[in-house]
Image 1 (tube, rainbow, N blue to C red):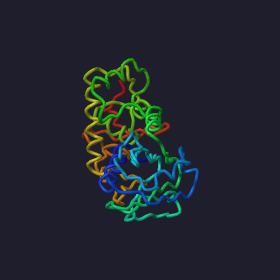
Image 2 (image 1 turned 45 degrees about the horizontal axis):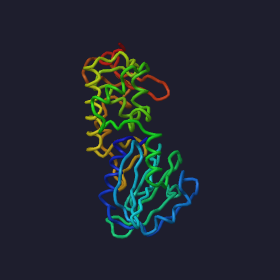
Image 3 (image 1 turned 90 degrees about the vertical axis):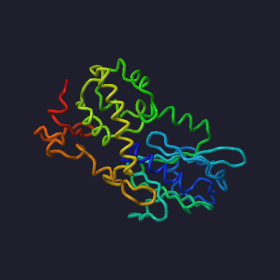
Image 4 (image 1 turned 30 degrees about the horizontal axis):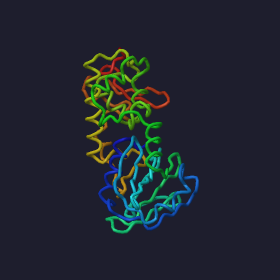
Length: 276
């Protein structure tokens, strides 16, 4: 599933290719792929791409037209991708939207989503603000340490589910939660209320480090993720524990990585990540 780093890579490539480009045509293959704003689609004809933003795991393309502003927001979902024509598509029948542009480095963006867990939303500014407010908590790349402290204060649940709760911390999924917790030395089931101030600060720092490293590597292509230009993310080569059940701990402590099965599998070292 694309997480924050993958969404940031997608936003960055579209931003570089299409700022200033004009939308000349938009084909929608299935009406139900548009969650909100389907009746407003004619407004986007001849609108110009002004900015591309990431919100959690979603990508918002900002259009301007006659001083009005609207957005196309793409949920990447479990298998949703935004792709340029150069990307090889294995199952083209799952391309549900094609946006054609003039004046950009790329001529088209395709929304490919075989499982259709994600959708597009066509929103004005108020709609985007409401979309972000109801779906996403703090952004781990921009939240301050003080706000991060306040976020975790008085929480009583388990840490890993909290990190993955999108209305609390936006953009972290199973892959990066596992990698972050291993680097910090925290068990996935540790209670948030047990975290000391130094551990909380370390968690804050490592979270940012892991996400930024993953962005620099183009994200993680574990199953279905490809950047818009069709390239795979290279960060999976740097995964220390995710998917490594049975492998020796990278810290060379002599233990093997275990898999804790729950709703989303956790990978951890029983020695380096003791449950306190």
